[in-house]
Amino acid sequence: MPDRTRTESTRTESTRTEGTPGRAGRPRGSSRAMLEEAAAELFLEQGYAGTTVEDITRRAGVSRNTFFNYFPAKSDLLWADVDAGLAELPRALADCPDGLGVTDAVRHALHQVAAGFGPGRVPWALTQADLMGTRGVLEASGLSRMMKQADLVSRFVAERAGSGAGAGRDLAGRCYAMAVLAAAVAAAGVWAAAGVSRGNLAPYVDAGIAPACAGYRDALGAG
Amino acid sequence: MPDRTRTESTRTESTRTEGTPGRAGRPRGSSRAMLEEAAAELFLEQGYAGTTVEDITRRAGVSRNTFFNYFPAKSDLLWADVDAGLAELPRALADCPDGLGVTDAVRHALHQVAAGFGPGRVPWALTQADLMGTRGVLEASGLSRMMKQADLVSRFVAERAGSGAGAGRDLAGRCYAMAVLAAAVAAAGVWAAAGVSRGNLAPYVDAGIAPACAGYRDALGAG
DNA sequence: TGCAATTGTTGGACGCGGTACACAAATGAG
DNA sequence: CTCATTTGTGTACCGCGTCCAACAATTGCA
Image (cartoon, rainbow over all chains, first blue to last red; front, side, top):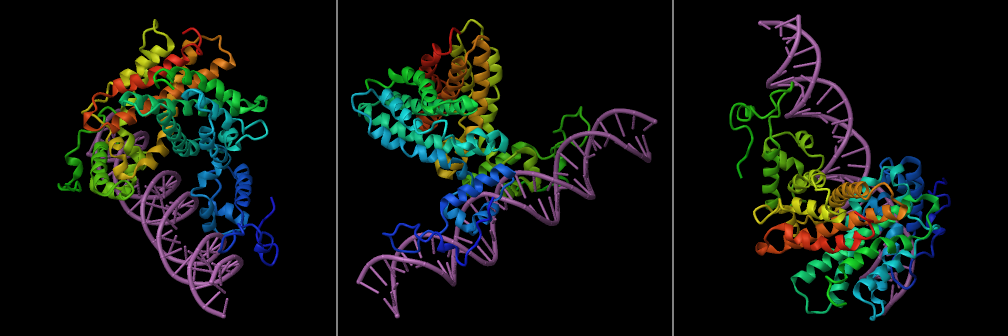
């Protein structure tokens, strides 16, 4: 647990070439990864609630305000891994071949996103959530993420299902989007809880959401 | 907007008979309903974020600490109506006739819970969430509630599906529980957004979760 | 009537997350 | 060099939520 405070005359000396060189302005000196590392260490040492933002920034060698330049909230540290993987969902949806039905396309896209997580890349916030007492925090910051992805899926479904949509179609689309995402979350939870014996996330998610996709296929109209 | 501070010599005079008379100790003087009323008024006047707990307690005529004797958090005010309805889910599940299949039983129980909400009883936090800027807060405090109910459903499914359960059965059960609850949430959202033309909540929920129940029926084994 | 025991209410203080604002530092462009 | 732009920092502040030591009101017992 090395202290990353100024060991050299100027800390920025070591991380000078970080910022995007094309843009004007002061380049980013203290990298986001440093904060994540410091937070990961401290969470394991003291737990999530027992670690203040000031603790993290002190170990990372930056000011407290700098933290909020990189993360909107402390809880976002727990989701850094997940958010990175989830960021691929829009592309995965857009790149789906048109031949597939709506639910098959969603299933395909979620499979692709889940494929990014294997035994070597487990969001540690999920595995050790109980140890760190982060369950409440994770739940609090989790639904907004789920609904964000659900909105994506919902819009995707509304597009592919054609413009001749009635009120019932809209209801089914939104319910399907939420249901499939919730099933994926549950599958990820089971996967994370499986311990060292877990393999890749993708088969868990695929098996977990398949019934939902099958069930809503008819309700979503010809897709 | 009447100020409920001590208009009479002793405020407790008007609410003397509140507490359970059988138990020892000081009876509850300031009722929970007063805080809810005061909060409802203030949220409409100033919005959720613009209203502090102190504002609420001042209008209700109690101390700030008293608030936290009734509500664990400020956000719980938004869910008071919903929580009351959701409290019936365990009974609704337990009272399901054994003849029904697992998914049909869950569907029946959720229908029963949803039946408590009609055009005359709409959780106002849902309808005017956008106006009050409570979307983020609602999302933050919503997933924990959803997962709480999902745990109930998951245990119910695990019980009724019999003891001969494999790992795949557990995955399906958890995914189904989350999916059906998420679909119900989505349906409630559509219902709340339907405006004055909305009728009862029950048909929305039933139509929204039916495909999920149908899809997972086989995966949950003979139920 | 007086005395515990119990329960609710209050005041005060504190820690922490998150925001706002002004200013310093570091770059590229003209 | 000068200026605009972007990032880091210091400071102050607000509000939620917790904790603790009092005080108030009621019940039950002697």
